[in-house]
Image (cartoon, rainbow over all chains, first blue to last red; front, top):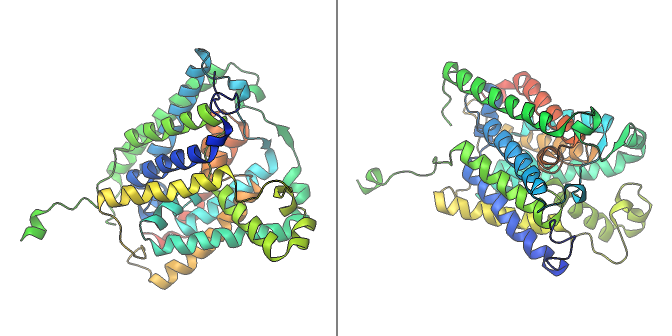
Length: 196
Length: 177
């Protein structure tokens, strides 16, 4: 039963080779979907190209459903999966800072790596900025530590937090995604095309 | 003439829903095999930690943040995410070859200069890098991988990123449209 490496079904020696392979698939799909172009990515916010919204939320819904199905059939133990921990304050503050960086840079880290791989020099400079930003964070960390660790809720899920049924929550996530896809199609029809 | 007859594939992309399903399958496989999700900013963090550690080992040990990622028996670069990101570069490069998109250039709106684009890209990267440490992950590690396992923090960070990006992109729309 999965997850395979933590349960020693695949030996841990394979970890790095598998990381490389999965990374290749990840990079290939991102590039082939158009995430190596900052102007295409930014289209989501101005309404001339919703590729980010479509790819991102389709991927989210696919993975949520896939993981729940694998768990349901007993092939994967959901309880053994790493749930990104929730620190309310830093999740919001960090998200807002990242959004600001997104609006200026036009990439997120993963998409900037893809753009570097196909020769985008603006993405190269952006990635350099990533390192500088992280470096800067290590310096100011002592002042941010209280905020960084405040409001810790542990490895909690949304249905766990609201004590609601997981499948009901997922159903609403799917409805929300479909609603956004329809809205995106309607908006894109009205927005003037941008050539890029 | 042959130039004109030959179709330009450099703007051909996957159908976004098909791309999304493929991305979802890659993420499911990652959780199924490793028990964790995908990431991107983590590899940059490992690189920064390694750099600080090799340039100023004493400082690294005392730094409240950097020291969290240093252990005696494992090198910070020998990290799952570092190998994954090397893969990301290779995979994107392959896709770039396949679609004929390999070309060095500075991509920017015709309304701004290359120089301005590069300066703003640097600032954007710095902010995103900083924010990814505050939120313990970026769009890949916190938002997408978090959402895949229904993490509350993942959903919150996703809304933070997209909500704030929407507001700031209109504030700075002259950079893009």
